[in-house]
Image (cartoon, rainbow, N blue to C red; front, top):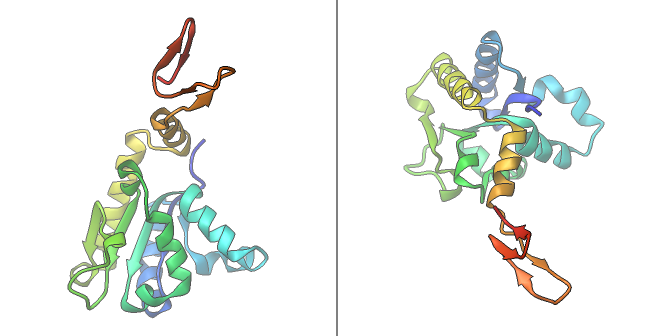
Length: 180
């Protein structure tokens, strides 16, 4: 199973023009983009919080966070930021943070494996970097199914058997093996 979108763009309206230009460059490169203004009709008929959470967390290979000063204070973008919190290192590679703030340092939850200073780059340069990341992730076989399998491999299996014994990683009872 592949992701529905190659990328989902999260931004605040104060940099809407910049977000629109980046989305345009990405689409010109053949990238399947989730960009809210283009999806307004379908979003209006849904439970917005649930749809956005699912889109950013499960349906998009990459999340592009265009962080401005108002972005940091917005309730809507807080949901989009929250999706990235507490992720495994592997999933953090799916997030790209572009900093348009006047701050010296972003909050800890926005420190990212991929960080771009948006004040020093044009929209086409940012789009080019994003396309490179998407291609790299796809080339390395990063898709929703492999991500789910990878997570299952690392989960600790705990089962209470009939004797009331809790078993964990790599436990064996005769011919029965738990864990990997």
